[in-house]
Image (cartoon, rainbow, N blue to C red; front, side, top):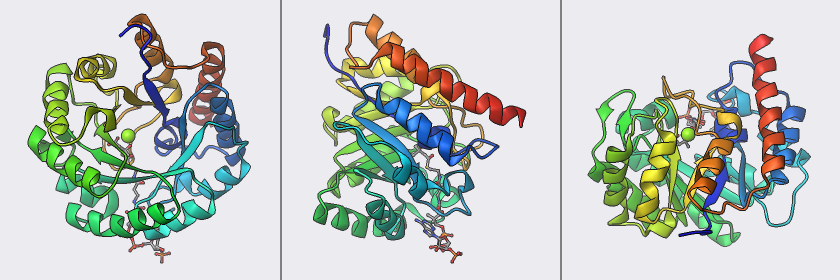
Length: 289
Ligand code: HMG
Ligand code: MG
């Protein structure tokens, strides 16, 4: 295990900023992505191509993509709920797209205004287009432990939708504990259920830190062979359609914990601290204004 690589997917510019009360300027978002680009992440989730009425904070996704300085070896990804989002992401030269659905019907309705089945109907042309353009597709599954509207979600319910995402061609399934309700025992059960369908190498953990258990939950996934985790710089974030969803687990804290356990995340700590400071300054300014 010593020195084994763990891939950290930086989702702060998207998951972190989508829920800020004040809109962060496009220039600041670009600077944040540029700072993150120097840290050593293989993937940075830059923004979402969703309806500006639903998520006004990320309405400038195309401008952010156009303004960033791309580094070799970094994949700049975007969330795309439907074909319209995929086409805009393609025009913005996103290197990966992420489709997103839920293990809970109620959250799916609140978040993307459709049933789980309908979400898969929307994904089909995205997957087809992505294949044509040789763009990898990631699949997000929200509410794998609990839904803020309908309560607990069984491991089997999460596993079945994860399997559907995998079957349609997602190269990685990111398991979202959207409201941070998980703890090591429930995360272990749910992840084991998912791994009955999806290989551990194609599974990522996406843990919000509402109850300060996200680091413990990451640690619980390691013996199951999970080696990819989504984190947000400075622990920014939350989902506007999930009341109570606090930030994602902090990138810096996760990197420190994993390094302490002997894993290598391939990140430059000094540059990570720079990006962390800048991200904190953004939300502090936004909270004051
Ligand atoms: P809808 O209202 O059902 O869609 O929304 P519609 O097709 O009826 O279109 C309504 C309007 O949106 C139209 O504009 C469309 O053109 C426009 P109008 O004619 O009224 O001016 N529209 C779009 N505009 C830009 N980009 C698009 C797009 N599609 C339609 N792609 C829709 C359906 C999916 C669009 C909407 O519900 C939506 O945008 N939802 C996004 C919600 C969201 O981004 N949530 C946060 C991300 S998920 C998350 O955070 C969880 C995650 O982190 C994992 C975890 O933690 O669990 C991933
Ligand atoms: Mg999230």
